[in-house]
Length: 252
Image (cartoon, helix red, strand yellow):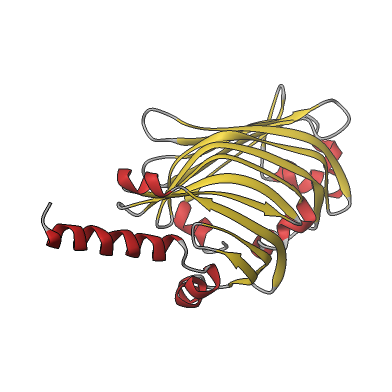
């Protein structure tokens, strides 16, 4: 082997060593401008494996974050890390970012109280909501702000909205062959709101909500308002709404 080749290999090996040992706190200095609203504190470890003992999003404490990056996945054109968030929101996930600017989340679990979760989405906190949220995301793909694919399930136990107990709910998330993203949900048990429905996001980025409530009287003071904007059927009152996803993004 030529001496120049040996020198090149030595330099490449040294650079790889520097990258793998590059301190996370130094890397964060270069990246923080690309992470609006997110502040990481008490950093320890490297860019490949480390910990941020303090994670703050828009001024709200989110917990501590551990990450473990898999360098070999870069050979497949994807930067991939296993992360663990512990705090008001407890979550594990495999997160990848590809050369085609697609963010992928796989094998994710999320557990949180709705009151804590709602702090990070104040736009959706029109009505004070309480309950226990648990979610399992098999896969989720985002490109910029567009949801390309989603598969998983969600459960909300002991849901309260505006002081009114609504009950327990489950939902399944899926993506059809034609690209339609779907959320099918239903109540569990018979001591709360008896509801079933689905929320669709089609390829034209239209949102379609179809909701059937079998006991609208459980809504209390809101029952009359719901009946006014829904149609009465033999099984209950059905509410349908169609809109553009861009209308929803204004509030997120």
